[in-house]
Length: 389
Image (tube, rainbow, N blue to C red; front, top):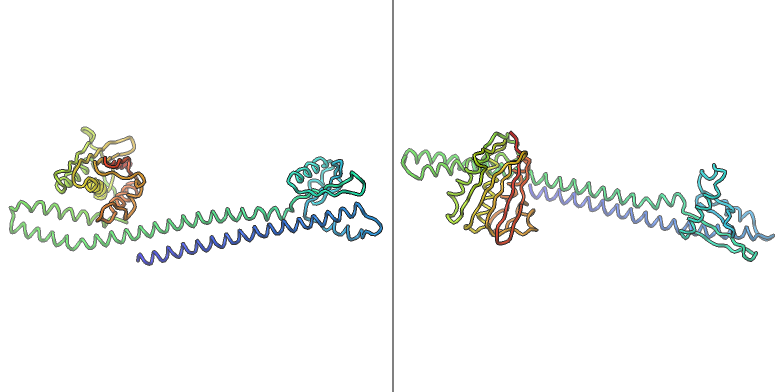
């Protein structure tokens, strides 16, 4: 199943890469076409300028028809001709607004000066000393549109890449969630048979040795396994939140952890004095969060140190902080610790904090994060969940 997901993901990545390559190739082609059209228009203007020079210096040997054909053949490139006194001699292809207005000479002159400032002008000296004409030109409307087109393409490519990456990451996350759900439900299913067997054996032991002091502890551990299997079975489903006293929940987890950790580990709770902190939550899953935070703290302290659990309320949230005196976490790893597979231990799957994050965010609409950490001094994890009564 995982291999199939990997193949689908790789195919999607390949399709995105191919689409990007095609878009870039199209972008470069448009750029080359624009540059070619610019050179062609420049050549046309040079020919037009020669024709204008021939017209102004025409004699009996000049083929006027050919000159006029060249001049009248320009129907796309805007041209303005100025004389040495900066007067407008003629203009072409400037747009309808100049034809409609009677007094547009000043506007045409301003446009000519703008063309000259952009470096788009040619000076032609006439036969009479001191006389000359200046041909000012601009890019054609088609060239301007074509010049903008690559930027439009680039914007489309960027939007496409963003959408494609978002779709890819969403798909990858959905695939990962399906794997998580499948593994969780399979784990719950596999645990069911040995748990049922253990429950039967505890009943046999109860009948044979009813006064055995170890029997209550065995029953507690079997019930514990039942809760663990129940937690796994709920992953992927939408369990119904129920009113829960968070103070009792935390105390219950601490009592369980106290019996199963070294005597060198001290776990202390700090609850609001005389106050029950209640909200609606999936208690069996949230217990898992508290357990994982405590277990990670114990591992970080190498079996010796102090864990302080603080519980407080705000008008909207219930806040829990778990302080430990362990080895600490590098600041660059504050977010990585919640990723599946991330672990600093030689043995371990790196799933505890990832599961805790899913439980807090997906099932309780809250937040869990590393509030602070100092190497060699300890770490503070903070959990915030909405207070819903």
